[in-house]
Length: 312
Image 1 (cartoon, rainbow, N blue to C red):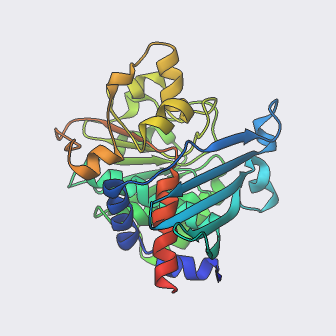
Image 2 (image 1 turned 135 degrees about the horizontal axis):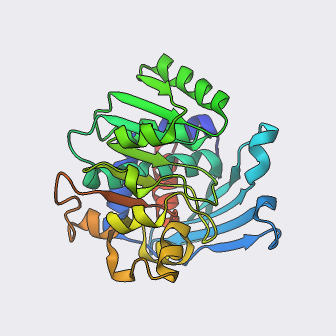
């Protein structure tokens, strides 16, 4: 059995190749039961969450991811998301590889948002606002930059010092990155807004979204969490990575559904539809689009296979 460390995962999961791998997997499909989602303390989500995500293709590979999400880890200098990924041969059950799930999860999540963006973000988009400055943020910026020519990156974070560090790191990579402190002004200017936070209250308001903007929501992975308000969801054309996850786990979708702000039929398509061409994605230049990602075991499996084959 291979042990594939983070450095090897990072080398294997370059964004153009990873985005293509996800696209192929959404076209081909696999078996992926809805993930197990267990609060370690049901009375306090800040105490942590355990996620268990299996997926397999008959006659191919089987994968199992176990992840812990600890919202308070940032204050301790630790990643909020940690875990392991096991890859098996789905024919004979052999264990093929053990990987750190943190790097794999972050990269596949960013790639899924970029995959959606390839259908939903205007071709001439050049300005991006990154809301959040955790481990997901640089990956989302790099992934989105793989599908659009982003000339200006703005970063907002509730702790400005983290945004400053991220901007400095990205500048050294060649990005034109700057810190912003006025979230509303930055949002009104951005062609693409990507949010990766653990917020339980809306951060982005619909009135801030300019015609043609795209809102990419990556955080808020439980029904109690949220990054956008009702107005944003109401005025946008809605897309999700998977309908099952979006309708059951995403606070940005679940809450407005429960209050009647939107209906299930308002969700236009998921990544299956976009990748298979049954929905064309963005229809108009001035259309406001919203993509809500909750993560899918299919995405993990695609990334794990790519990493395994690159290191085989």
